[in-house]
Image 1 (tube, protein in one colour):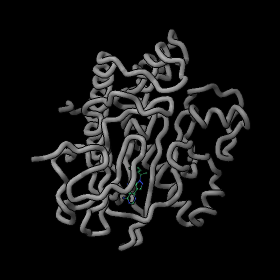
Image 2 (cartoon, helix red, strand yellow):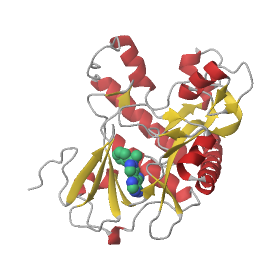
Image 3 (cartoon, rainbow, N blue to C red):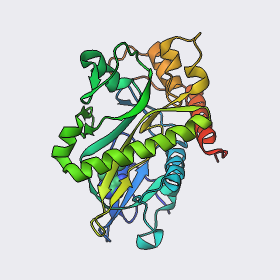
Length: 299
Ligand SMILES: C[C@H](c1ccccc1)n1cc(-c2ncnc(N)c2C#N)cn1
């Protein structure tokens, strides 16, 4: 009898780490160059993991990641299923079988718009990660050209720390730092243009890269261009001047949840349970984002 899988128990696999919305496993009996990244249905907002989870979210974002990996012209960490133990059925649609890499300690953030921590730093200093920007920019303004604004990974639950390109050189050396910046900007620009053709603004995203210990090559890892690692906006909403700035910068997938929480929670203590209708509307938004970007119906 298949016991229900809790977030961290998976037959044949050893749980090694949990993020807010994903869990990492390694094969119980090897090989040691394989990793299983399992996307949960958990959704986080305002630095809290919310209850209940959004059914189908993990599978949809895994499918979106795989769709982008197949369109990005660079080595990625996806592993050949023949090279690993079987992925348990209960997570197969939301699991990413990956080659274990030597991960670089740099969050490779690219911004095509100024918002979030980038806007806060700009408002204080007129720059982001040491990159001077024109005066007078407002939250959510599109940038003339995308900027590479790396961050140093923080412990779970803390915010990553924006660093300068020069600091990234100190972390990984000049050759790798340049390769990370070049790859991040190239992938972002192509993805931004593809999304724009489909009426979606890719405002920013975070890539993670590693070194393949067997080949030494630079490999794109983690999830890629999902709405958990990126900010996506609906272009028709963004350019609607009749809307407030907050509404124009509505995150494609989480705005319904955020708006409900703003009206039903004082942001003190644990957030209230999401009503079924909010869960359902959020499921619809994830499906809509998937369909807009990939041109495929979900499910
Ligand atoms: C940030 C992310 C994470 C995922 C899931 C849950 C919490 C964190 N993570 C990915 C690796 C990683 N390590 C070695 N090889 C790899 N191919 C990968 C990947 N992907 C380590 N951490």
